Length: 315
Image (tube, rainbow, N blue to C red; front, side, top):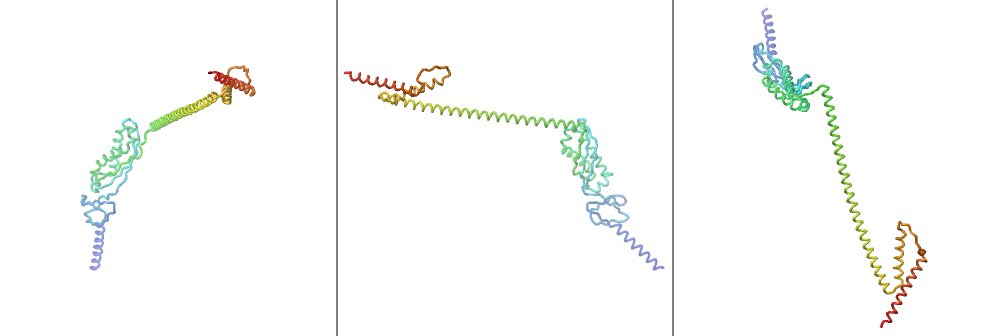
């Protein structure tokens, strides 16, 4: 009987030691911190790893997630500065940096952060008008982050980011904004069309100006060429006249025939090209013209012979 009692006591003692060992050994996972309470009072924080606590005296109070967490901000209605009703929602990114304060300084940490963010969201967005609300999201996020992060510091929490996801104005305001945007784009399109037409008119005027300049330069060059041609023609005519005059002075019948025939043909051509009605009585046949030229030549010869005779009688 004594041996049986000793065996039972040994078994109970072994079981008690195993229980105390198991109860005193705590393993904390990576990314978590455990708070330890002794008789209900916080004593220390266990970081990730293997730890021993005193059974029956110490116990694990809170298991706090130390990783960055995301908290959704549900949609809520906000009245802007210009009395427009909009619906907005967002997300909050935060991280617990002090497990003890996050566990004992605030009751229900997640609910506290959520309500704090929603309240400040209405405050910040309500201080802006609708146009600012739609165009200054970065400024809204920055203001919310500053306010909420400062308010959560006593809780051992670091708010890293606050992002506004959606801002939904009323349907009538959306339709009015769409019409305004369409009108603005039509205005820009009309301005661009007007600018294009003005540029085209400028280019067209420049082209016409260049064309007029080139045409004037062409006329000037043509006039210069015509004047040069007339000058050369006049020089040739004067030279021919001098030669004919010299030949006539020398009494050359061929020169006289050439000179008279040239003037006769020129006069006949001018007379024929005139617009007035005309009646001509003259030998228009080639034989008649040659006969007339021959008669004029004989007359000139007689004049020359008479001139020679008069020269001989002069003492």
